[in-house]
Length: 173
Image (cartoon, rainbow, N blue to C red; front, side, top):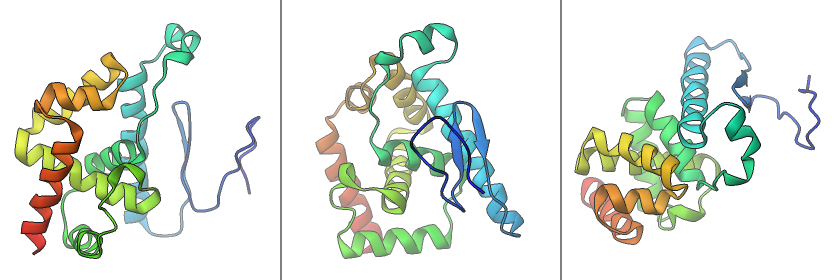
């Protein structure tokens, strides 16, 4: 059964769908997976509200919305919804050892989600938990996540990206 909308997008079976502040989930019989879907979807909605705001003024000024890299948004939602665990560590180890996380800004799907998770985990470890909150806040204010990262970490994303890769190379090396 698909979700009927006026958009040209269709609902893929087994994939949570978020429209504005509504979440359409699927249940495959695994309560743990359903719980994870709920946590990730709520985190995605909260991230969207934090960055784009809510209310009629923001609906009218929709042209002010920003393009956020997939690693940033899906990685942050996954990071907010999940504690570090052996399964995540195994996926990250494979990703870093194979080199597929080398260019985080171009990743999509699960690769973006896991690499983004690892970036947010690194930011939290290197700059503190408040840094994550501040990057979200300044991304909403400045409408640019690269500027927000520079304001909070005091370094350009390219340098942060290099430090992130070195951190995991040392961790998994």
